[in-house]
Amino acid sequence: MLLAFATCSGIAHADIYRVVDANGRVLFTNIRPVGRYQVYLKEGRDPVPQGRRNEGRGYSGELRLRYAGYIKEAAHANNVEPALIHAVIAAESGYDLFARSSKGAVGLMQLMPETARRYSVTNRLDPAQNIHGGTRYLRDLLRMFDNDLRLAVAAYNAGEQAVVKYGNRIPPYRETVEYVPRVMAYYRKFRAGS
Image 1 (cartoon, rainbow, N blue to C red):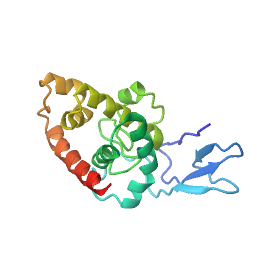
Image 2: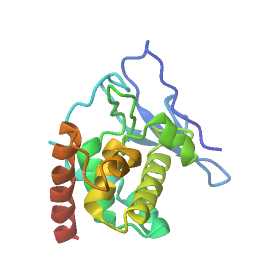
Image 3: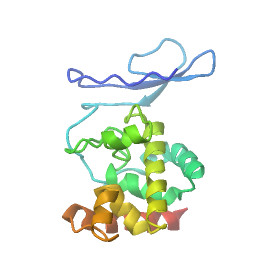
Image 4: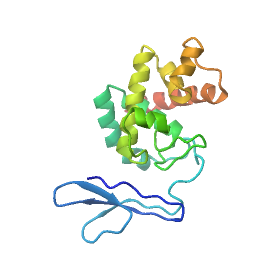
């Protein structure tokens, strides 16, 4: 059984530890375990800060590599290019697992509560669940918009109804109009580097 992160407003610092139990199950905890363990995430700040801090700028290659395995799995399972998943994560959270938007989106791929429920994500702060749920959503958006990357990305940001409402065009929302070229630039960068 995977232990979920426990977050509460009174905790200012939270190291997360990774432990493999006798049955081979991977467990995560914020309580320092006895015996063999690995520090999974070392925190020196509020674990769920309000507002996004970096909007995709300033993340390290190490952060990108930390989630590469989850991204590769999700990409393979959903037939979505890893470069696109990386691009969305870079633009949405800057690889900040604890990113939280003012609108309520959480995690690496900034899943809204409704999207998380739709894709059976029970813990939006779990990187595997967040990436797999966000990738399934991207897959469905790509299918809905005939593999038009720009429309799928616009729908990821503004919602599929907004894209449909504007005649299968990028909605004229400032955030979305700025978001689509940013994601596409990351996509080209990551695609060239793979």
